[in-house]
Figure 1 (cartoon, rainbow, N blue to C red):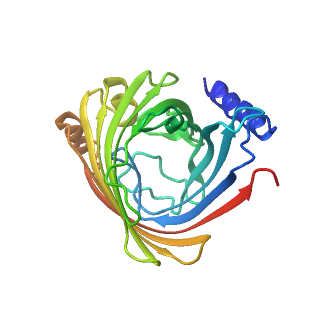
Figure 2: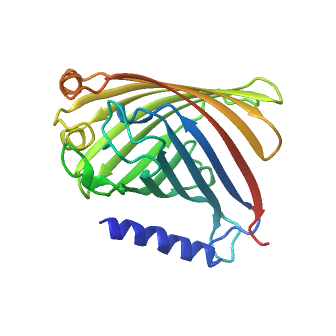
Figure 3: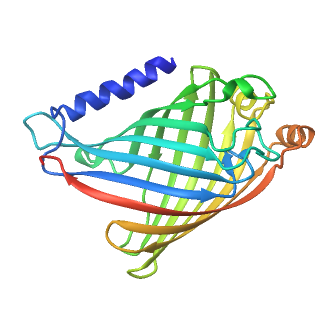
Length: 288
């Protein structure tokens, strides 16, 4: 299945970049960022507690039917990586002794159709995400090999204005590879454009974990509401292409069985982290 997901990523890249589906009337958007963070937290589970560096690269490819101006939305190809800054990962899930090494690499292909073309007033996305764990054989609680999730998401912007947005969403992830389990999360995100230089983004999410997913992600097969998390980010808009963002995040494990298990393996069920990063965005003409 891991090979299948990578083949899907490669095939979609070749298909679109071959030009047969690119929308010549829109720009290709390239987004990248680099940040340092006090911890790497995934769905309420502390992966690395002692500080990490993270980076990502995203390419939004506008799509259209061949020989047509019909807007089909975007295909987004993404890569993300987490680098451990110390050998000591702290009270965390990832194994010790990996300082200066990548502990996780994610590759994603996501399709976001333009549903407004069909009179449907919501945003949607489907995709495949490959989790690559270079040191998965070193996990003290059992080997965690690289794996794959398929996902779908629906969101609806409400009260959207030039300086204000409010967007609820729901997402489902299914891992048919190593896990054979589901994870659902509902989120509400709010954006406020303070002025030409500063923007604030707030978010809150509540996750539900099925037994198999809990066993893989948390180490105990408990189904239920898993994690509640909140995020806040203050972004300084340096210029049209560059931003600087200070981020805050917090999470707590809700399910009592998972909390008891965290206490047993000495991992905090309530967490807080900070991050500081720089982002870049570039528009490239599709017909250039």
